Length: 492
Image 1 (cartoon, helix red, strand yellow):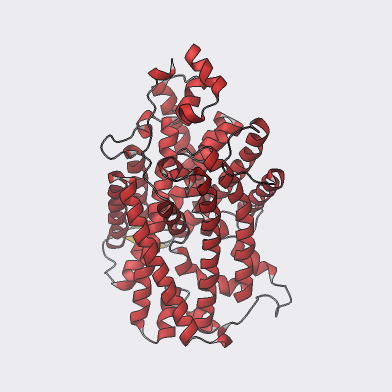
Image 2 (cartoon, helix red, strand yellow):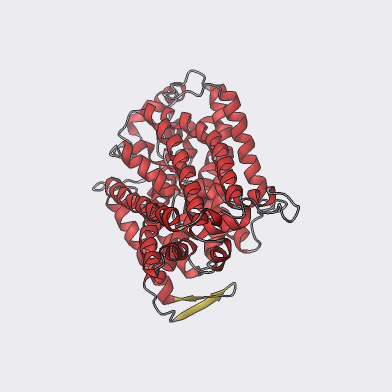
């Protein structure tokens, strides 16, 4: 089959630099900090939590450096799939893409649970019509329906178009920033430096501060997930490729600065005993209400934090649907997932699949929130490892590849990125301190593997054999495909 006879779908270039930065930052800074900031301080102490995020940011910058070089060099939807195929071949490309899809779907799924919790804080609604009980938590229809409706609305927005989704993301990101300003203001004006205690945990007990710091670092992969959404939207960016690297690094640094500021704000706003008393509620909202002396400010804080849920949800929605689209376009999944809607220029089937999963997740109850976060983190670090290895492989195989951003010390960057990813992976394995919980979290991973295998088999059965040359063209297009393989395609 010759090149002109292959139908390759493509996406419209409509995203400006502001859109991309809002996508990355808004995705990274979601709802997690609202629920977890006080817990970080409790686990590691004020300085301990800050140290944990500084270390995590530095580690993520090494992985980010591989994305910063590969994304502008191969600015195509699918990101991790594209990098792994170029460096490691078909199987590892499929494996990497499905792993990062697990990460995006996992976080997108728990946002439906989070939004139900947030809205219930602002406007309490009755817990009625019990459906079932999962792991000791009763699931109510009235609670679940909020997340289901939210997922449906987000799905429709993403079907309508990426530009509309980007505008939605920018507005939401502004809302997050305003809520953060409110939180910091409360701590700065009404708080006290005497509340910055303890600075580190474990010292009084004689065990040292590192146990607490590592406990906080375990959460870092899921907290910094967001910069890796940038390559998913690379094909839709209308900016010079050399600017993409700057957006990657800026988003990581902005995320680190945000978490550190929130840790300081939470610590200044209330003493340790008060912070810990809010652990069963929505800590940041309760701390804000305590600092300002009025529950109204807690509700105002939640309204702003709702923007974080929406932007994170939207960002992972985009990321997941673009990975699924790129796999469908490459004929790794059934062909329908690689189709683009003629009117809206969006991958409708991929968006709908993501939406369906997000609409089902609230039916699993509140406890599922932790399961989704943990499995998403696991999928993230696996994808980071594969991208890091792909970075090294592409450097070796294609030293002459056009790289708008070129790492000055690629061997150091590649080695450090691999070590960082392996370190985080070990934390989640059964022998690690943050091992995924059996059976729920490992069962979710197993379900994802089985679903991927079923879809891959369905794709092979419905599409038939695909030559290496054809797949090369489908993944990279004429501009970025390796010329010797495209030559074989046109001569085939």
